[in-house]
Length: 327
Length: 306
Picture 1 (cartoon, each protein chain N blue to C red):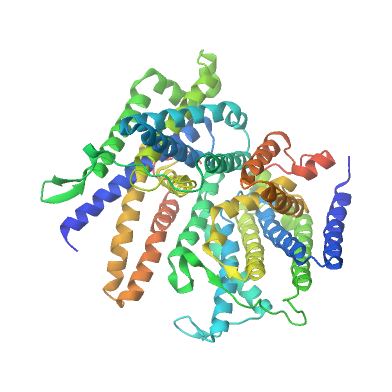
Picture 2: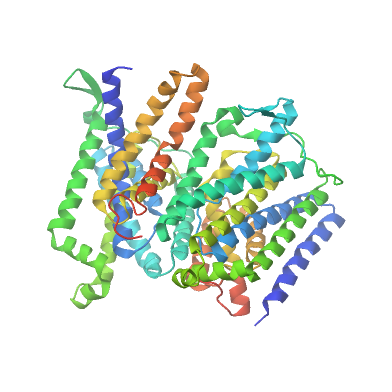
């Protein structure tokens, strides 16, 4: 059996190797695919905090992904038409600066996660799954009916937003920005998992009663995890919108929430690199099977079924011979 | 805004509500008895609609189409239960969510493979088309009235089945104690397959009935599925009575909200902004309703356990 840290190192090295190949062979599309992997992995790392450590099966994380995306779309569209954003009490100028957009995306998704978490965490189990799903749908329908920002058609941004010192129009440089964000999130995940907070959260997933007995509030632990989780997924949403230079209600769709969970499961629940491996495999499958047949989702479904029924710990679990976290 | 319009919208809301009930009843029954969260329930709705459209296209008979929808959905449900779902009982909810998510992918793409991406159309039969005059001078489409009636009949039938028949007693006993009724000689796995097929048939029926007023297309089941989730969360998971009341509440809220919220905002806003704010708020109304119910009762109106 292979040690998990070897797998982790191999994955990062593999991504960088593909990047090097793509730069040398001048294949910008491969870099775009890699960027897609990186951003999806970032979103799933966010979800992994709630799902993997906290055991919160959120089927509504697309809400945060979409909020991040719309934060970018709305700010950038105001900047590109030079109209200030009217918030009633005061107006804000739009912006094309990534750090500002990210900050807004993180704050908005954290706020949303706080409210959704407060309501959803009153419940557990199936209720929690369905409620998070319903909140995701609420944002989905809201974005469709809010015609000021494109409604069903979405919003296009003509030029990718800028990051100080980086030319984001060059695929490799934009990839670098996303990759650094992913690495920082992975470091955060790793530190969080080993921190007293992470340990308490882990315990709250397994035996909430005991956590309560030692004087901690499991509900509060889960809420904080949910907020951090939503904020990271929101950041990924802003990056994803920048990758496509397009935001639409599909970013809020419940299929996306499902896919984020799928990424984690393919890789391994609660594993540091689970989401990254999942995202690599998902995008590779999408690209490869999608080229072979228009109906590649059937095969994705079959693969998923096999993983759920026969390979409980995901790919990392299979390689290391350990099942990993039970949710 | 007249009384006539108001009554018409209430009837529309009821019609939507009873169709949601057909979906929600199966979901809540399957959860209550087997403890399974089934995302693929919307796919069975779609299977019913496609079977009905195909049979109606071949034979021209609406009744045959309905029978085909019931049969196809029940058979698909039973097959899925025997091959996949059966392995998921007692597993973590996360596994159930994923496996049934995988089933959705397989069902949706499989249907697209067989029938193509273009929507099919299912016509309302002649004897159910056209408006009917109700007391008070209201003209209302006969077909929608028939849907309300069918929905109410199914609700009554389900109540009778669970409360008055032997199989119903076994189903209710299965909810409470699986080992005990297995020990009493009830074939529990056959009972589970039956319950799953029954839920599937109800979803298929709903798909076929609604398919005649909307288009029959891949992915038609998921929006309804999610509303059905909202319904059972409001009503309390596992409770058929809760599913009925929840479905009617959601149906009325969604329909009336879409019509009256924009009008309401017109009282104190200018027309364009009012329509936009009103319709945006209306699209969220059922979820707000759910939020309110949950703050008040975290396990739903009639739910006993989480």
